[in-house]
Length: 107
Image: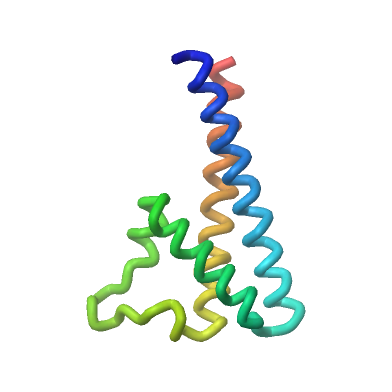
């Protein structure tokens, strides 16, 4: 079990780093062009849905205040996708740094 745990932690960190890189790339594209083309829009929606499904803090923070306020991501403007991606990217980066700090303290 001890051999699996460090490997799992490393894979989790790599996935988080990859997610951050992909989110940063999407944010850069939006900053350059001012909008998402359909392919990048689909990627942004996928990243947001993935984070909402796997990160409780993201789920709670991005939850609509009322059920009536819930709008499908396919219908929201690019600006909202950008804001939510930015939040998720920052959250994941902070989480990754916190894990590194904790691991270094345990060594």
